[in-house]
Every structure is written in C-alpha cells, then in structure tokens.
Image (cartoon, rainbow, N blue to C red; front, side):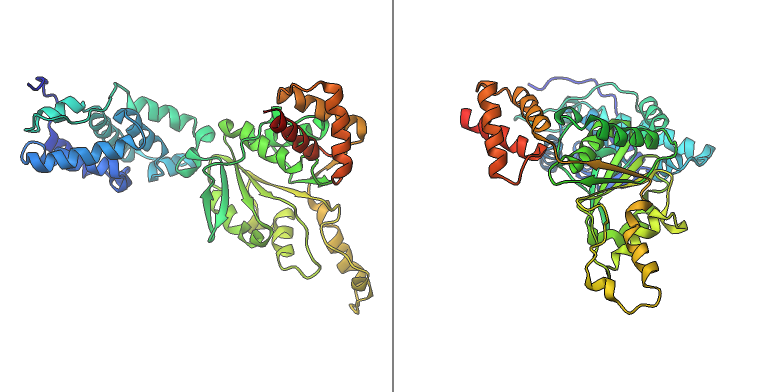
Length: 403
C-alpha cells in the first residue's frame, strides 16, 4: 500500500506561479525545472503520463544531484539575470524589482521543497518510483548573502568556473583546468611573491600592474600564473587565457568583463612578435591604457622567453625608413610597457638539486635521496639542462619506476 502523505502544496497554483517568473525566466530552459513543472501539471489527472514525466524529471535530476532543494538553489545562485547584473554593476534595483525577486524566490523555494513522496502519492500507480531528497533552506536569505558577497562569487558562468579561454569570439569556461597549487612550486619564492603581491593588490581594488614574466624555459613562469589563479579563485579571481593570435579580442573582453564585480587576469603564454605583426598594436593599446582597452578589474599577465618581445633581425636594421630608429625603439620597448617585469633565471646545480629534493619528498620517493640527486644531475645533462620542469619530469619518472 502507498504511504499516506499530508498534502501541503497546490500543484496547479505552483505551476501558474512558475510561469510568471521574470527575473528567473531562464530557468524554464533548464530540463530539471521544466520537467518538474510538467510532472506537477499531470500527476493528478493522467497517471500514465505522470509516470513518464516524473521518471524523466528524476532522471534529469539524478544526473546532477539526488537533492532537489540543493540543485534548485545552485541554479538560483548561478543564474545570470537582470537583478544580479544590476547588483554586480553597483546600480540601484528599485522597490518593484525587489518585490519581484522576493516573490520569485518564494515560488522557487516552494517548488524545490516538494517531497517526492507527495508527488508519488498523487500518481495512481502501485509500482516502484524513484525518490529524491529535499531540505528546508531559506532561499531569500541565502540569495541576499550571495548578493552581499558578489565580488567574491560572481554570477553566471563566472560563479561556476574560474578559468576561461576564447573560442569563436566568446569567453568559454575550461571545465578541467590545470589544478597546480602554489604549494606545488618550489624555490623562486621572491619572484613568485612579486606576482602574488600584484595580484592581491588587484583583488583589493588597489592599483595593480600588467606583468611580464620573462626567463628561461621550464622555470615556472606559466605555472606561477595558473597556481595563483587557482589559489585566489575563492576570493573572486578569474583567468582568461588568450593565444597570441587572439590579442585583437582584448577590447571585446574588456567590454564584457569591465562591469563584472570579479577581478580578471588576461593571460598570454609564450608571447613574442615578428616585426610586422598585426597583433602588436592590440597589446600595445591596452598596455598604454587606451580608453577602449582598460578596466580597473583586470590586468595582463604574459610570459615570454625573450626580454625583447619582438624578433629583431639584422636585415630589419637595414631598412629604408626615414625615421628607422624611432620605429625600432617602439618595437623593442614593448616589454617596458609592462608595469612589472619578473625575471626567472635558469637554476644552477645547487638550486636544481634543491628543487629535486623537495619534489622527491612531495612525491614520497622511496629511493635514497643521494641516489636520486645523482641520477637527477645525469638526467638534466641528457636533457636541455637544469630547470624546475626537468626536475619535475625526473621525479615523476622515478616515481613511475618505483610504482
């Protein structure tokens, strides 16, 4: 026999109210939300249809969670809507919009807390139907807290992800970014701290510099930027990675994120130019602070193996331009337009072996450390030379051999 459930919800009234959503109108595009409404609409009138709709709804829900309330709250908090956008830009929302928000949050909260047993009790079916969990949560209070901390959490895709790339002219999230942490990086503490301090200034809303991380291959320049992005994501930092050929996208990116309450790093890895490179002007514009290319909530972080970012050839020095020296000076001084340049030099033997030893402890190598260090030096000599990257490759090789 079916378990008797005290009916607390008017399903038809809730369905009508759900179709009056304005601020959260886009929830109707979410399969779980829409299939729940379809289930509520037919569960008392058409049992066969209700069984199908309910099963479809639970299948969609189980793909994300077995708790309807938690899932619906997540939808609400991550929803990019007109109220959240106004709050993000520091604009007034007005009494009418506030009233609308309060009503809609109450409706969504009630929908999220309908027990599965209550729905099942209204379906004329004695077989098994899957159940889901619900809980009591105050959506209005939680949403108010999120608005208060909007500079930390953001909204829309920026509240769900913290690393992005540009694809077909759009900012697209990276679902599985490199999870490297600052604690994974060894030595180069002074260099890394300079970049961290600049990032903290950005997060605090203080003046921050565009940063050029320059130095030898494998010294940890890119890893520093990625680790910082991971470390401070919870404090409102987001990273947008650009390829060199996408530099012309910078003005559009700035326009998109300039009013966002979060802070952004535009990251360009392995940056260099040829003399006649069209992308040169795009980067030069933002570094010089042109009106269309600046925002208080973002900085450019670039890495390069070249101190002078423009490839210079002897033939270029023999050009026929009248003001040739002025042109060459403009090309070669691009790196000077970064407010902060941090140099990563290739390590000597002592520093290299120190990195190896720290990594060996981190990876819990069982091989005696003297043997590890001896093999590490031979490994470096057989590669491109000593560097933190080579040290990590060696330790991972040793770990693999032990396993």
